[in-house]
Image (tube, rainbow, N blue to C red):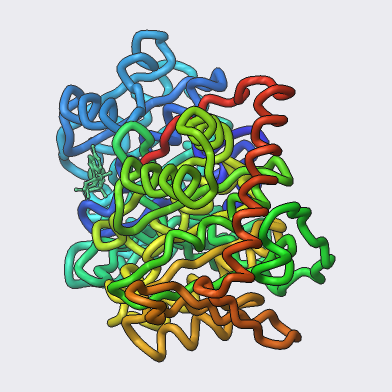
Length: 478
Ligand SMILES: Nc1ncnc2c1ncn2[C@@H]1O[C@H](COP(=O)(O)OP(=O)(O)OP(=O)(O)O)[C@@H](O)[C@H]1O
Ligand SMILES: [Mg+2]
């Protein structure tokens, strides 16, 4: 590829950008046109192509400052003499094209951005005038022998600009759109190829993010669940006893009454993580990472009998916790954040904690919620990741739908045993008989004591023989 859009994902969507290529960026005010154009320009200067940025509206300092906040360092490109930014006043028809031609001929540029072409279009309204304009763009492409990025603004209240022949001569058009879902702004971009390739339209969400500029959320929508290899995970301690085995790619739904959640549910997860020396990623929609870590610590110490140092070792080595407020970000952004975390930490198990919260927040767009969730689950399953969804039973329909998507279902209830409440688990594995695990029974209590002993031994052995955790895990921003 000769030129880039400055964005890996977008490069794939747009395809190869060879010489003499015209890219049209279309959108409403504030859609992100200038950001995308600047980002394209900046990325190409980094690849050694000089860029001329022509603006009719915005002062250099203002735009350079705005873009710098987004990680697009136009000032640096200018300092390297790879970028010339020119703001020209809108003028008479004849004058404007001459001024542009003069500017472009002055030096050799391989990328030219015109932000925007609206003032020119306004001046060349009539049919025969449009021919002059098209001719101008053709000549421009030949002169620069590179990439022309033309920005076109659609006024509010209109869905398209009568671009006509301009659309026809562009090689690709990127439409930037806004939508408001659950009161949150969702940006969507649509790529339309008009020349040199079969017409294909792709619409995907994106964001403009501090420090990162244009972030494209490529949906990871696998077409079908991969044929699952039934690879049972080793577990020396409790899993087989309690739930009858966990397999790679399993989707596990664990539900509890909203007022009584059992910390025991983390035990089988810790068991297979440690035994298989993999990692757990916990994404909580409710608690902070510190709260989750202290919950895990109490399970390791109180329920599994580890010392405080041993518990810390387990937490440092095997567990990464992130929290996100699902009410604060859009569905595509949330999904992208979660999948990026998985790609980054490569956990064996990902635990979604308090899943009823995103579901409730997105209830008004429930179809979007389930579509997104199913795509995500299939993607994770295809990666061989075990997904554990911890939910409070706040809604029958939600619990049933969640369980119907699962390979393993655990319903935690409580029963009175003496003057205590003890958990009792109802466990169903796809294709198997249900089991009941009664934590008040002597049999289970003995097994857990025995398991805890073994667990402690394994940890001691691991601590003795292993190197310190190799990766320092840093956090990600959604
Ligand atoms: N630092 C930032 N962090 C996140 N978003 C930002 C930041 N700065 C700007 N934005 C967003 O970028 C958008 C503006 O982008 P841009 O100027 O590229 O749009 P535009 O389509 O060129 O607009 P116009 O039609 O007014 O020229 C705004 O919607 C704003 O919310
Ligand atoms: Mg702009």
